[in-house]
Amino acid sequence: MESPPHATASADEMPSIWKEQHAQDAPPGFVPPMGPGEVAAVESLLGYEFRDKALVEEALTHGSFYYPYRPGVTYERLEYLGDAVLTCVVSREVFLTYGQLQPGPLTRLRAANVDKEKLARVAVVHGLHNFLRHKAPNLDGQITDFIEELSMYPIHSNGLLDPPKVLCDVVESLIGAIYCDSNFNQEIVWQVFQKLADPLISLETLGKHPVSELFEFCQKTRRGVKIVKDEWDKNLTVEVLIDGEMVGRATYAQKKEIAQNRAAKAALDKLKGTLGQSQTEPMSAEVSEQFNKIDLTGS
Image (cartoon, rainbow, N blue to C red; front, side, top):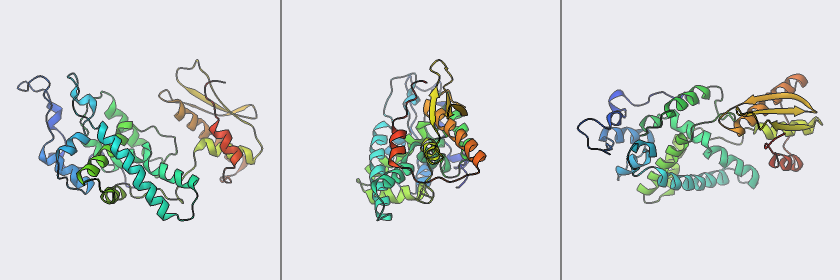
């Protein structure tokens, strides 16, 4: 995977104009537009030239950018549209590429190529996050943390990372903007996204979710699994018990699901290390049903 840059555009192309949004000579509520150079830099990253340049600005404007004044136009409508069209064009691609594949694997392939982490990777690899117009106080730090963690998972973490949602949003909104600007041409959208998302996750590189893999492993080795969470723990600590013994534990205060996935991964690593195994068989219908019924509401 191409290393995600901290800055893709040159210094004179970087979005600096909105860093001084409320200069002394600006009226209250003034929100500066994107400059022509900034719009051109985004077009270059996307490989698409807009007829309606205003769509670029709309696609990159977060609701916090207007603070402390009344919110104006944001990327949310374009994000909604982009989400839908990406699902459609990627569904078509995996359907045509894998002519004999059943709906279950097709669904997992599609999801892996349009989920929050994959799209967040697209944003940072191409430097699109550098053009995001926002005033969210902690967002830049969260993006930096995500970029640093990416090196541990070259293709996909399968639920171990927690990318800032805004990174996914901005890719979807830009795709929605292209869809609008191209008179709703799905083929143009696919051409742009295919280049941005290269390499797409294939059947060969599609990973397994750590919780489902844990259940597969334990079914194969005839072990009992229990995932528990202490409701009184504000840090969201999740433990994995195998035959009543704690073998995996993780804490992630921001999100229960991430803690669950990391605990499952820790348990898997320990079990595989003990037994010297690294592969499992495909998930059975019984294990799939167990996975779908996992309850993390308490112990």
